[in-house]
Image (tube, rainbow, N blue to C red):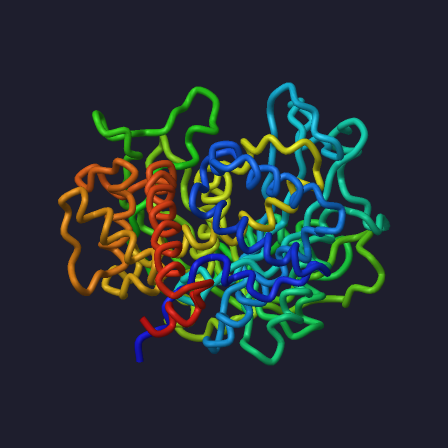
Length: 489
C-alpha cells in the first residue's frame, strides 16, 4: 500500500490549542507562510502589511506559549513513530546566537569568549532505525544569565538542582513517556550524554540507548593504584570485525594551523578510505568517588570500540567508544550498534536546516519569548526540509509523495514545465529533490544540493503552492480540506 501523502505544513498544526480559536487559525496560516519562504526575514516573507503585523502580533502575544505551539508537531511525530516497531531518539544541544547591535530582551550569553546574545536549545528528534526523520519530540531551552564564569566555576555541581546536565535526563525521560506503549525508543547521544546518573536513570526506566563515551571509568570499586580502567580494557576486548568506510575531512579545520582538505577546483571536502577495527565486551563499571549517594554500586553494560587502523598522520583518527544496552553477542548485533550511533549525525543536519535552511538566527524579533515561539514553528519547517533530503539520499526510488504534499507536487510540475524541464510521471524522492533544488539555481552536475540552494528552491515551490491552493479553493467555492486532498489525490 502506498504511504499516505504529506499534507501542507499547516496540517501539522491542525490540533493546535492556544486557548483562542483565532490564534489557532493564525498559527496555521503563519506556518505555511514560513514554509513558503523559509530563508527570509518576516518582511521578506509577507507582502501584505496586515499579514506582517499579524505575524508580529502572534509571536509577541503573551498568551502564545512556545510549548503549546510545538506540541501539535510533537504529537504528529509520535503518531508517525507508532508505525514502527523501534525508533531512535537522537538528542543534542546547540547554541542559537543572534549578532548585531539590536538588544533582545530576555536573552543571555552563550559563550564566555563572545558577546553574542542567545540561548541554548536541547533537541530530541525521532528517526526510524534506518534514519528517516520523523520529527521533533522534545525541546528544552535555557538562558544563561549574569556574567560568564570561568571553566571551573561553570562545572555542574552534583548538588545543584538547576545544573545544565539535567536536561539530558529530563528530555530522555519525557521522550520515553511520550512513546511508551506506542513504539520502542533507543536513545542516541554524543559524549555529552556520558553521565553516570543518566545511564542509571535510563536503566531504571527500562530505556535502551547507544551513547558515546567520554569518561574512562573504573572497573573495580574503591581507589586502587594501577587498577585497569575501561578504555584500556576496551582496547583489548574481543575482536568482532573490520570495516572499510569512506570518511570526509570535517574536523581538521578546528586544529591550529590546519584547514579542511578540499578537492582542487570544486570546493568539496576531500574523502579518504579508513579501515576500522570493531571490538566489544560486556563489563561492569563503578561510579567515581564523590558521586551522588542514590546511584547503584555498579552498572553492567555492553561496550563497543571502533578504532581506525593505521590512520594518516595529518588526519584525526576515528575512535568511538560506545556504551549500550543493545546485545553484542554476534557480529551482526555489534554492527547494528555502530550503525545506530552513525545515525546521530542526522541531528547535526537538523540544526543546519534550522540555522542555514530556515535562517533562524537572522530573525529580527526583539524578545526571547518571540524568538522561542518562532523556533517552535521553524522546528516543523526544518523537519520537512530534512525529510526530503534524507529520502532522496537513502530511498531515492521512494515516491515523491512521501516528502512533498500533493499541492507541492502540482506546483513543482507547473514550475518545472515553465522552465522546460519535464518531470517523470512517477516522480521519485531523488528526482523531486533535484527539481526543487533546480528552482533554487542548483546544477545537478555540481553534486548534491546544499541547504542554501535547497531553501531557495523551497521558496519558489511554496509560493507557487499557495497560488494553486487559492485557485483550488476558488473552484470549490470556499476553504478546501487539504488533508483529504493529500490523502486521496
